[in-house]
Image (cartoon, rainbow, N blue to C red; front, side, top):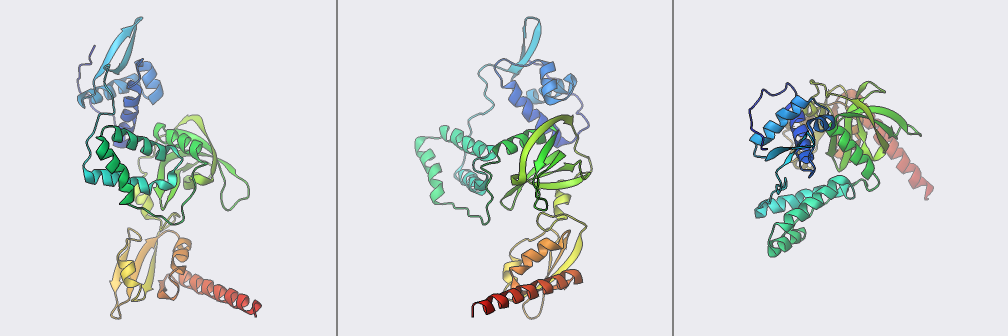
Length: 343
């Protein structure tokens, strides 16, 4: 029988969690055999009433949810012949945008994320006339994406699959993580809040039970992932956008103000990019500029500034200015020693 809909008051939970759960419900209802409310509640880790509310939401959205009784048990599923993947029509610019995104995710080749993107491209191609599909594939000749310092995730397929399931289903995981500071990998229990793809790298953001703190883990350093039977809820005060803004690149800490003067030759390059959400730029009479940032780690700022050499001068804080001076002195001494050894 077809489900008749009566809207109920939504549960008091983050909207993102509802959408994630309802998307998972769509996948479960697409199965041919259907599922009982008890089965759906178990797989989604919610009550039967919550499943009923979600089914009502999907029905209002136009999904043909039906139920049938077999041997006295009610099973829920989509109407026969319905496919969640409906044919879509893409404009030229939408096709180009999709291929551009595909290029950006090239570092994840060999992982479930990239494989899913490739599968999506193939499905889209099946809905297009042969000539349009050839044009779509030919966009590789017109759009190129290059990245520097790519990471290799070809050996992290199982890790990424496990982390993805844990993030969306809210399961605590036990990871074996190899930090750069330690010779041996360390086992940690982590509540995985989010997978974050940034600067050609994939990272796990979550609560580390070992440190009792919010941490960021490079996925390529995670050797294994085991799902525990414990579930977690993302803290209501966790704001990922605010969390990102306390870092210059990938290291977090208490924000502090940094001021750097860039030479007139580098000023245009600095102006045309957003280096950090907190940045402010002041123009000087000689054509130079002063870049002000509020970041949580000076070490990453130092590594970034070394590439500018004498074209960048640290004004504040004194700690960073002294550190840069010492770094350049060590570099000069090393170059002199190498030069002397060749004579």
